Image (cartoon, rainbow, N blue to C red; front, top):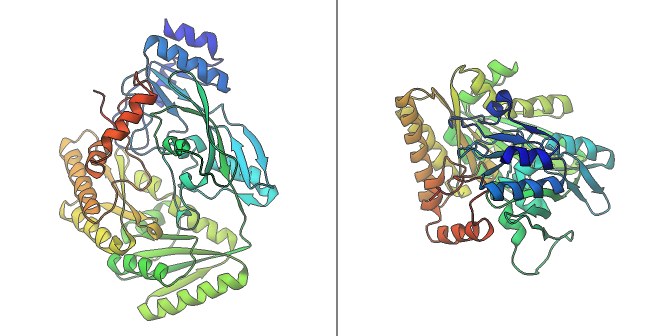
Length: 451
């Protein structure tokens, strides 16, 4: 039996019903499905053996970090083996002189940044949740700092990957750049667990900024707020973060996070660097705010800034807490900056037309925004309405030259939109999957339907 074979090669193997149930679902509306078994490897060697067992018995393999994915990537709809990386959480090497670090995939974002503090370094990608770096790599995560530092794809220098054959490959280089051959490394960044298992990730690091300040701008309507985001970037203000929250989101955050933010469409903007540089950026923001006749509030106290950003990060969980018994749908699209205002206004109109309470928020500095809905998973009418809203938002983003997902990934929830967006290259994508994973062992049903 394949579970006995797994027990022979992995130290911790579980078929406990509670553990299986925990690994059957994610944070959002996608229906659960339990695996046959959950394994907790500690080494690359164990990962290799897991792949050999899966190949022998033709059992699917689904990687699992901490379960914060939003499009169902970690749900094992075809049963098989869930590989929980929580015990592969070693920081292998910190190289401050090279501004790089090598980690196992189970290391979390917060764990890494805590270890980097004593070197005066930090890792900038911040999707909000304390996700694992393996999961963040697999979904090409980005988040609040992406406008300044970029996404995971810009941070990953090198990967070690176990392929479906059991072969271990190294893709990428320790060097800051390379022009040697195809960018094989980048195939695995954003592959959502469909091409292999990551065993080590080498990442780029940055020096901690000397000084930071947060400005909160309050607007009368969401169209003005989203247009202002574009104008701020066009003005040359060097923002580290620029986040939009609509009035509905702020009301929910206030209720759940004990904040007293003005309930109106708002931009949260962080600038960082040397104090003189920050003061200059803030002066430009003040001038812009005066021109727009909008309220501007500044916050330089580190604890107050941290509370403000924590409230922003907790927005999704706040929406869930306000709707007990319901599931979340957090769609995300990304459009060219010049089309941002039109896309956000359209999203609000669509939600309002269908009579569904929706939160709109996002990392608008790179044209990425989210629409959050809470729905009853057992109510077919609500489910149908949710899918209709999602489809209209995505279709409009594609019309504007955008993408169906800026950072959440395709998972199982956006497969048909992937086909619409990449009609001319979908065959190439499927060919890569077939070449690297001919038996469809890794995350079957994610990105592509199982044929």
